[in-house]
Image (cartoon, rainbow, N blue to C red):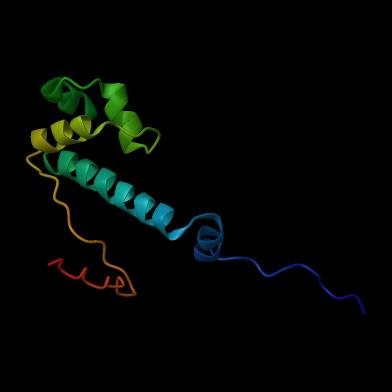
Amino acid sequence: MVKNNVPPKDTWTDLENRLFNQTDRQNMKTRAALVDEIQTGRETKNMSLRQLAEITGIKHPVISRFESGITDPRLSTIVTLLTALGLELTVQPIRTASPVPQREPIPACD
C-alpha cells in the first residue's frame, strides 16, 4: 500500500499568515480599503477615470495603476483624489482581535 505524502492544501489565510507578518497584512488591508473607497466614490458619481483625471490634473494612467493596485501614490495624490470625490481621509485605531497591551505609566519626576 502506497501512502500519499502530499501535504494538505493550505487555505489562503494559512498561506498569507506564513508569508506576511501582522503589520504587512494590516498594511495590505488598509491599502485595499483605500483603493476600494476611491473606486466606489468615483463609480457612485458615475465618473470615468478620464473625467477624474481632468478634474484633478492627475494623469489617467496614474489613477488607473493606483486603482489596479500596481503603484503606491503619494499621500498628496490620494488627498487630491479623495477631495475631488467629496471624500476625506480619517485616521482611527486599528481594530484587532487581541487588545493592544497597555504600557505602564511613567512615574512623575519630583
